[in-house]
Amino acid sequence: MTDGRSVEELVVGVLGGTGPQGRGLAVRLAAAGQRVLLGSRDAERAGEVAAQVAERATAAAGGIEVSVTGGANVDVAGAADLVIVAVPYAGHADTIAELATPLAGKVVVDCVVPMAFDELGAYVLDVPEGSAAQQAAALLPDSHVVGAFHHLSARLLEDLSRPTLDGDVMVVGDVREATDTVQALAGRLPGMRGIYAGRLRNARQVEALTINLVSVNRRYKAHAGIRVTDV
Image (cartoon, rainbow, N blue to C red; front, top):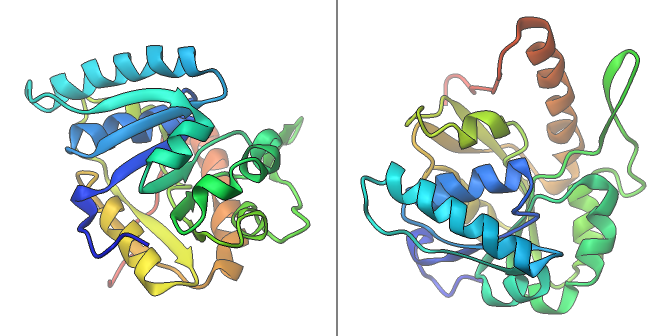
């Protein structure tokens, strides 16, 4: 899975890395010293965004050079040790289905939220498999799928004027080594903790909680996260 290496040694790929959530996770992880590969359907666009992320992360790291490169999703999936899926839900299944082979044997972190909007605001979409993370697991039978990073504001992730984030990352999955690894990765984000929150079958309510946070943000003009108490 990770061959016993510490999380600091892992190369992290971000599929959908040119979007707000993927880009935000990439810049924060890179600033923390993680080697990051940024993936997109458009390899040229991925390279352009990766250069921007690297410049911003280097500045946030006090001038210490960071490692961020871009490429096509399939190349990133093959080269990374651990992969975060941050694509829009509309393209979730199609993107993942094409990457089953390069993702085999790897930890795959799904942070996708099946969400839509109407005149009443945000609402959760029904997923036949139960959740986006379970859909990923069904399409990636040889990978170790973990659900995490759903509740982090993309705007706050990208706002490097805030060196410390305030919140916890709820982590769900069925393989202890995989969830431990993702918890440790979450802990690399300043101010954050990774908190185990159950089996992958519990991913639906973790994903859906994001919709409640969107409603909080709209009412209070905030960028809300969550904090688990007494842990």
